[in-house]
Image 1: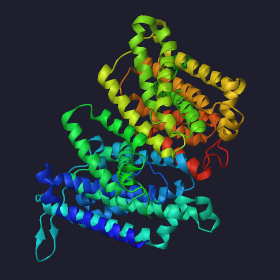
Image 2: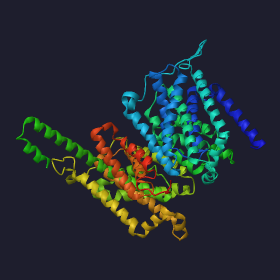
Image 3: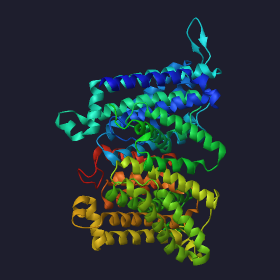
Image 4: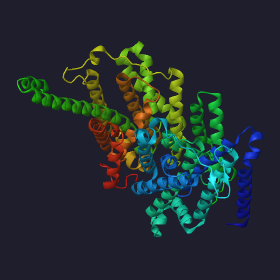
Length: 319
Length: 314
């Protein structure tokens, strides 16, 4: 990485983290509210997980909502039956999503291109139907209720993340920081470089003796672990898990956030998620036809901003 | 047949009669569900063949395919009072195909050179617009489509579920699938489509207008979606969300049959239709899940799909 680029990415890092850390203070003056910031953060984490695969390995999964939902149900069910600890429930949610991803990933990774996308969608729908049909466990169509996030107990003192919106925001931000840090470290490792090599030229990577399938499988599994964390945080945010969170249209939203923000950039999906969530929030409050406008957004972004907002600002892609 | 069994059973003891009747009911139920499965499978086939055509030639996953089905159905609903059912059956799919051509020319054509991700996202957004648009124009309430009275009657009292309309639907599907395969096999257009599926670059180098080919191919695919919309409307009535429910099984049909193979898609659609029909008898809650189980098994044993060729878009 050249010196100028390194300096630029350092500046970007400082800006992003300052904005995120101070969000509960600058959001209200702009007409926002902390809970909106929390939602952006959670969905951004999901979009970044999708982008970990899409933007950096070049593989399009259109079924990641399934693993997002598994994270949500995993966290919800563990809070309901297993544990009283919010962080532990996130761990369980992540584990459920990651393991499911690892198993299905093994079936999926040999496909490429549109075929890969189709298979991921179809397998994603399996979990949607399970959540929908297995009412005794999941609550079916009504979603999973009867759990709520628990105060953080540090022994000497405890933090109330249930009623204090700011405290919960920082709780979510902590996990967001943790997961994005892991992502960044992986992307900088030789493994991450190999992922990008596969994206750029799969055939050449294969000729160099890189086991492409295994790399894609690992990347797929990792991104399922990541999005599992996002899903678990989402369940804690709403104290509720919704079967529609597993539906492929949710996957479409995640992919859209990544593309709209700029899928070849690390922070693009965060920007995309912010724009998407705010727009959806606003549109659904002013018109019943918000679905048409969201659809129109998809069409316009694809036709006119295919490189996304950050790709537009920064034409040369990093990493 | 089954009536005869019951009559002769009358002379037997009560327990035997009960047993025979129960077996009879079981056969009825099984037959009922297999028939249902075949009919639903026929719908999957119509939808999936159109999707498959577009996917094979243009590498576009048309998420709006369910939307075109809905458009076909609602157009039929709108013009039935003027043209009657038979007129609507002919005109509605044609109008749907015309809309399809416009959509392809304006929205999808600019994306052919790009990553398939973009056409997928665009048609995904388009599906939203179509669903919301139909709700806006025709309302969220379901709409009935009147079918000719003679088609609405059951053909026999034993098998009350086989109505004339259901038979008619299956015949229509058989006829249109045969026509499609004949078109692909014997006409110049069909030959070009098949050649383009294998190697579009060479087809283009031979002086064939690939843009036109893709438009026509898209139109044929959308025509099939529109036709299934009209047929479905006569059986199930119309709802703005009905297209999305048929989209996923069509994907599964294509994957099970093997991407790139139309006979595979045909077989895959019928297979998952019947499989979910039979499952509905024994384990109703799993009737939706069974097709995904089938898909997983196929991907495990034969990753390219039942009829897929190695290296075809894998």
